Image (cartoon, rainbow, N blue to C red; front, side):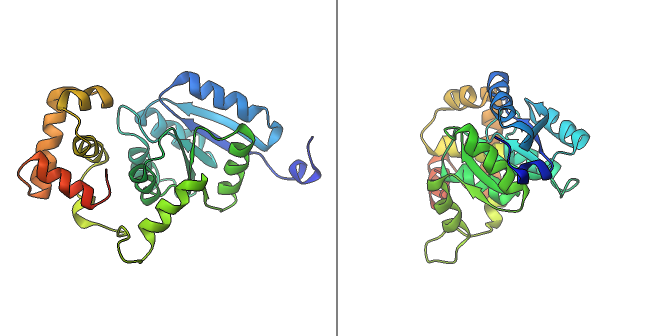
Length: 225
């Protein structure tokens, strides 16, 4: 049932970014069930499509997947936010890993919810970020508080060495530190083994470390694992 308040306010214009078309269709259908409160104006399945689509549609809120084969949510934020400061980003991901949450929040997202969220709560979260609130699935808020607090042992707000790495290099490093072989990393990220080797070489050069074991310790110290 539509309330008088909902009748007075304009629908939130939403743009969906996820590399799985079936998932996008499901989200579109779920949000459509909430009447005129939320309107899906476009969608994209890659970083490039997202950048072009967001620039074209100028949505109020972008529902943003974190992991995509060509760069992921952090790359979309990096390329879109400078030219579109009024667009609000809400991460919607299957991942609840601390490093994923922190990466997109540092990139400028206003919130982060997991794909276990109900359609009603998702619509409510979209409305809340559009109105200026920050929204997180319950257990994820603690990651953000830890990362941006000044408590002893908390992750720093800025890490000059970590900031040298591209989003893709961070993804490769995270998997490497978890013990993945190059072939497994390539399969996980939909890239070639040669590309994995190139990214690892670049990370070693930027961090001035010598091998994957030193990289693993370095990544662990920065809570990437």
